Length: 559
Ligand code: FAD
Ligand code: NAP
Image (cartoon, rainbow, N blue to C red; front, side):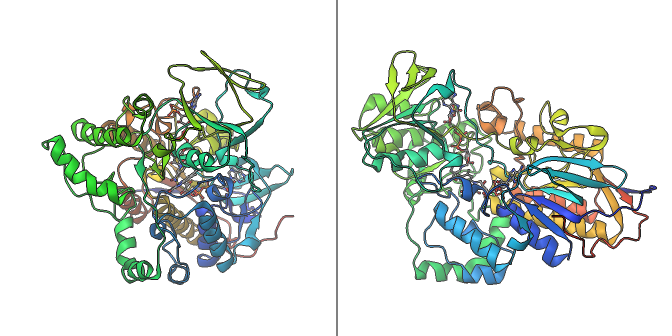
């Protein structure tokens, strides 16, 4: 049970009940829920000049969802579900952005969003049990609750290549792509990175009228065909007829996707039998392929057979056998690094104007004014595209200089890796909640499902605290330690920790090696957080307010 203590808080009025940071999928729904369902005064701060988050920033050619469109959406509003019709099996970046703008306008959210403003600091003031939030325009505002919805993959990462800034041509990161487009014609282009972003941008750049494309690959990936196609009215009416069931199944599944795993294991199957099972799923494309065998991620024998099947497909697709061998992943199990989908990725390497540099054989030594110098050659370019990923899970949070009780910074607290209670909150940081924080299923799921779970839990919790005059809420240290230990324990039962992935923070040298998302499953996780709420927020200390302040009243807006 949680404990309730009376403390002598000074009567204190914050500017807002809640300040939210980030206007992506998470922040937009969080704003709607707190403002429109609880009637709280809420301000949302967003550094971009529009809504969209991921889909605002990642406007690179080929940017597209790997989640199927009919499940990559909000499920909380029936009118929106009925009014919006997706045009493709997987929505492309412009369509997701259009969708988020549509939802924003439909729910009239813009008036509570301050755009073009970055949060640069947030500190908890114990006297008033409230947060002071500083922004890059020099302003400060206060709120009783502080909700970070800053995204798990929103801080682009560029490796610190030797003399990185000496290149004099154009440089772009996929996660900060210029909104007015980029001209590729007649250019010599480098793409560094073959994760999900690289795998999408490479075929699109290769299609352009370029002089040459050179791909710099460190780790080959297991990419499965997406097999995108338009959705016609017939597809759509079938989805609409079954939408309740589909969405319920997604919310009750392990990965936030409504697909059943078909077989318990491949352990006792011959490779021939495995091929027979996987072939139709390969033809169907998408994440259903990954969900063929239930023990894929815990059983090395099953995983090796599935991995081998993918390797066979790559060898069959790429004409040049030497090139094919470079593209075949060998050093990690399938899906232990985020498994991308692709459209013509491997086929691209059959084009004359595309070449591949394996940087494990010939590492990048330095950037030079005209290009990239590897250990065996100088490669000259007009443009370098960094598809090198993100300071994932914690990077964006830590950039905000968050200070909890007694001046403890989140950076100090997480020096050896994130420690949270339920991936939602942290001891020492009262009244602060994080949507899809580290140690929650987040990136190991179809994210709108996890986002809705978190937003709804946070809203219910804040509503409960406000209704019960609870001014400060903080997870107990023991609860946090138990959750952190549980995270590690569950991860260690899987193959995930065997790969050098960004799930393990391995993409960035200075980060502690630790598995950051929660792999216990979206369904199990949801049940856990619901039980915590039902048991009066078990694991949290709740501090009762003595003030008669009505936290739902109108608050003056701070300019
Ligand atoms: P974001 O969309 O990242 O939004 C966070 C917002 O916070 C941003 O607008 C950012 O500008 C703002 N912000 C950050 N810091 C500050 C600050 N200090 N001050 C003010 N504002 C700040 N997930 C899936 O489930 N399926 C997919 O197929 C899929 N495809 C993806 C494709 C790409 C290219 C990428 C990068 C990610 C993909 N994801 C996918 C994950 C995706 O990030 C989530 O699905 C979802 O969009 C996250 O929404 P969010 O609101 O939590 O975070
Ligand atoms: P990523 O998965 O981290 O891939 C980064 C790539 O850059 C990797 O190939 C990495 O190699 C390489 N790299 C990093 N440092 C390097 C160095 N010093 N030298 C050479 N190569 C280097 O990043 P991402 O592709 O942007 O994807 C991040 C996540 O965003 C995805 O996993 C996914 O969750 C999401 N995303 C989703 C979609 C989608 O759903 N459609 C699309 C894009 C992104 P190593 O593997 O060796 O580290």
